[in-house]
Amino acid sequence: MSRFSKARRDARRKQTPDRPIRRLGDALQPHAQLLDADGNVVGGAGLRDREWVMVLGGKALRGTESAAMVLAMLKHAVASQARSGRSLELHVSATLDAAATHEAMAAGKSLPQYLEMLESERV
Image (tube, rainbow, N blue to C red):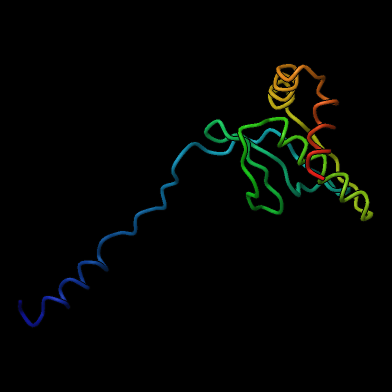
């Protein structure tokens, strides 16, 4: 090995362009938004690779295959913020609502009953 091989290797590394970060999987498709009183988005949920992902404060918190579970978590976030005096408004896409309703009907319940059951399991 020559005395200058490290110097040449380092120079070659500096000349090669940085590779962009490549994310694995599909992009997150938004299906629910939590809006504060000013209309700012503070959280929500989306679908990525057949998994519903809950996002709060710009960070993905939880992923689940259950649309009803993510809807229950969002409703719980709205309720807990309301108890602390901060009002949030939940906007849900028809896709998320239909998936959660289908899941509830498969369990033999209406969507409100199913969400109430999920909330009671949480406690």
